[in-house]
Image (tube, rainbow, N blue to C red; front, side, top):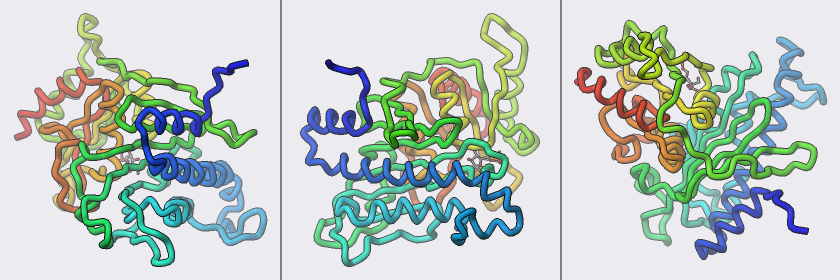
Length: 337
Ligand code: P6P
């Protein structure tokens, strides 16, 4: 009897058949899934470890406890290094590129990730996430990969997605043919298709921003926030504020329900005028996902995916979510220039 239960492995294989892939994607995505399951298990236990308080450096089984984001970073690097499909890794946790160890074959793909975004929220049991972005290498195959293989425009991504470790663990990803969400059933250790063909509403009721930064936002941004908070039922205002302070959690909610997330530039810290979020392993992958779901992602002035990267850890203002909300913000942002 045919069942409508689809595992992420079946979904990946079906995609591979449709696109005639050589299995590279499947191998990479399988390792991301493996690492996500391992990180999910540790994140779930984190609360337990915190009960141990200052002696929390020793977990319940007596093993030395690593900081969870360091653990997640090492887990994803190890899971991706030995499969012979990756030529270079970039991660928020490492200042420089992570080359594949000599003993492993190099592959044709470059992968970037934020291994555990929002990890400062773990001790309050707030949802956190992993974000990943995959590019095909562009330098000759017989040479080691370089920054050139990594600093590509977001439009060149071949796959991107995130894992949200929340009340349940979900994997959401795109390979450029729509967006699908899978929920982990820990009792069998399998991700099942739970959100097929995700589409974000073209306009939403929700806005997500850290309004304590309001005094530091530029004029156009402040006027946009003032506008969406003003009462006008005919234009669905005021919007309702929802802000968790964990990018993946805020993004995921708005992706499913509709809405806009804003982390604009601000004038408070001259050292990082472009706000807090990173282009290569936060803004670009989420921009790929949201556009594939019918939404939009902008710096306020240009499409995130068309920004030509200059540095690995460069920051960018991020306005992302329902297309009409992002477009309206852009009309206000012109006053910032
Ligand atoms: P703020 C978490 O630290 C993070 O990097 C993102 O996950 C989140 O969207 C943002 O910072 C929150 O920043 O300044 O509002 O605390």
